[in-house]
Length: 291
Image (cartoon, rainbow, N blue to C red):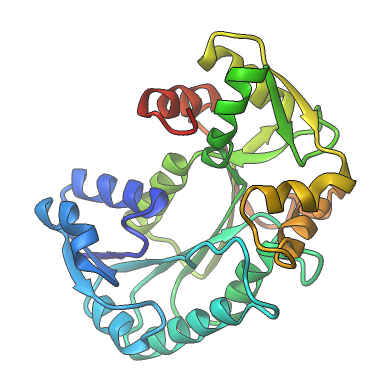
């Protein structure tokens, strides 16, 4: 039995599918179990509970062979990241009450830095809080999710442009598909390891690479172009972010562009991407995502 958080999301869902396919039992926690009904039908033990409830998290991890934890994504956190801090404290208490034989934690590229991270500050805080656990712990520092770029497909299909906050467009940064992350989660849970492990998960890809993959998926030429820095706030607000909440996202993108957020931590294990951007975009187009 393995505990998998975020099962209704892409990474947790991919990990759960692979574990079930391998003949393993899976347990999860859902605020509304009805939203995980499809997983219940697949045999997953779905428990009602919230990540901020340490008792519920501990009960869900009781007796498992391994656990996978992740922070729910939040694009516009309150100042000081109180939402993430509350869940991190809940995780610490749950792990004290019901320590699993091994733990896999979804982290992020750049989480070794203590400042200038923007949204990635949350995974830095998570790593800091869980770095001294007395059982094997693996932090998967994933690169940028390729699926985040599927929402640019509609504009690219109509205009031929892929607008990006990254600059310059030929500079690669590590990226990864959620299917690859889920695969690594399942592999680590089943295989095991000793001590603390840092895994840098992803391969270098540039906005120009993504534009070429969009061209392949859409069947039309697409080119990448950087959004001028002075336009970032207005563009983000036009996408629906409330005024005054865009700062963490902007700081994160600035740090990607400066190279502050990157791989290259001494002693980290590197795992390359296997799913290509073209495959992600083709799947998204077929599913109607971003189109």
